[in-house]
Image (tube, rainbow, N blue to C red):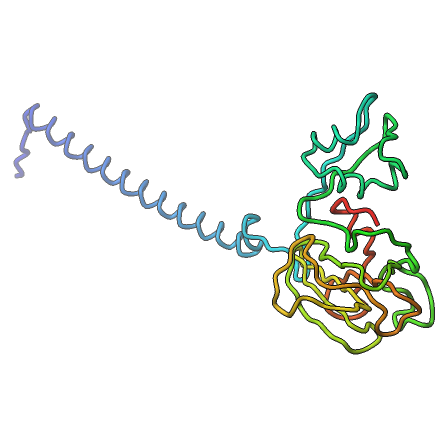
Length: 259
């Protein structure tokens, strides 16, 4: 015969409390493990997605050889009563430079402005390759068998021998040479990644590695190499090699310089 032991109410309450505590502890442990597992899985999934998508946008680089986009120079629309002097003061640019880059819009007389004319402000640190009267004797892209590329790769500015030639913007002298069809010529790597060639020079006053700014005098125009008369051959390239030319007039226009 077995003997059944009866528990007092107090002992029953204690036993229930112990069981409930054990159950709660077990549930808490399962919840923590599940959260850790979910966090780990989410981290792994996120890492895989990031790897597949490539580096974050903040670390994206420009494609090889591509130059960072340059901001367009500010512009101004002429209003009734405006003068070029007042506009130059408002834009914070030299009067002569403002007229220089807008000569084709304003005309021969800088005092004759017409309401509605759109003027461009020159970009700081950029200038024309010559600061003298010139005639364009050969435009960019002119077709012809006389050029290996099948077209004229630059723009020719007819100026007298000895006319000062300036770097159009900031950069570093990549190379100089006295040989070949270009005669005395200088190639400058610009700060925006392009290369600018100045050819048929009479004199060169910079050396490889020299830093230049817009307006730095780099030499004098001449008649060296394969020419039909004194002029400056101005060429813009995306690389150092012949045949990588782009429109030099459009290139300078991006910086507010009008050829």
